[in-house]
Image (cartoon, helix red, strand yellow):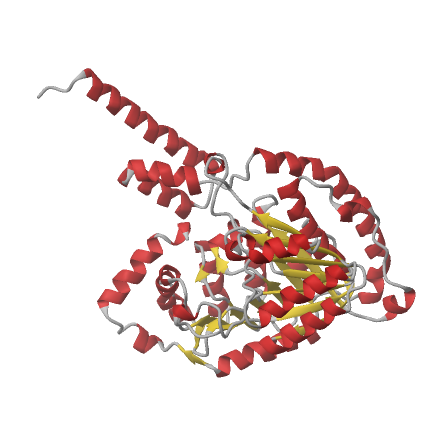
Length: 487
């Protein structure tokens, strides 16, 4: 049968669509592996590839968020200049800052200045984290700000929800921002309604409706975990508001293991401002932190020496290169020891090369990952990198006591990157995250002690045994690696 004019027309439209999408992918200038993965998908599965690219192919925030973002910039600029002025007066008492000058110099170019004089305390036991969180909430006098990826108010996490309600009843201004997917049950259930009845502001972050998905990317997540009390005490780290004894037990990966840092100092004000920014992006409301000038603690509090740190918010609305560059710089600037803890390990080529290079020049590089993972795709993709890392001298520790969820990069026990970022491309390039870059050897030793305790519950991967694993596993892992740019 000869082709009809309709067949020719359909073929021309089909070919033109492939060319247009290919040009869009190429001109977006993402990492080569990501662009190639999308091009292969568009050619191999044209219809499905087009749909997937429209939904997930670019970090689109939508016109409303972009408009709100632009309206926030003047207030942010004024807030930034005031914050820079007051912290610069207090920097001298906290010097020297860091032996890792490259990390420090790069972080100084980020969107928030160096913050001196912060009192830090690390918590790695779930019960202690909840106990101290509850105590800080109960002692709140003015304001309470929370932002979490997941809040499942069962078990002891329910106590936190009840404490927030009690705070609101005492007249405390309570603001809660939760990811629309991670906390879907909370936002769509009785707890969100109860919070609003009790006067607690509740905002769903990164929510996209059925029509909105055509102009906004639906899988950008707000992965931050922040609690701020009275603009002077803050918490951040890997811990979601869940009870590990109850959370995701059907995944059969054991209890989730997390760590959080409690901060007293100007960094608490900055973390609170980040949450308010996220709320303003969703609601269009004015940013309260930008409408007033932060007052530095009293002279007595200033006299207390504390840690210098940078707060690095990352996500699709800021310079996404900065986090990636700082991670690379931290690896390349390590001299003696580099310890990395991450539940999801899917590095890009640049990070992979940096890790191998550090190990080959004599740095003790150790990567701690959970033995079992709640994401099967990430689990297998992660293992596809092991052999070349092991051959370069990187030591891989598989934690056997549950799902190790702590996210940290510790450089020579002196500089720590601690927060919510996983070592996968979704965290680095796409999701809203927050990282504390802490220049403090005391905190570095505290982090080392926690990571060392994880190592005591881990089994180091032996390269001789690893290369002998079955062919079917190698094939599965390498197949998942092909999808790693899209994970």
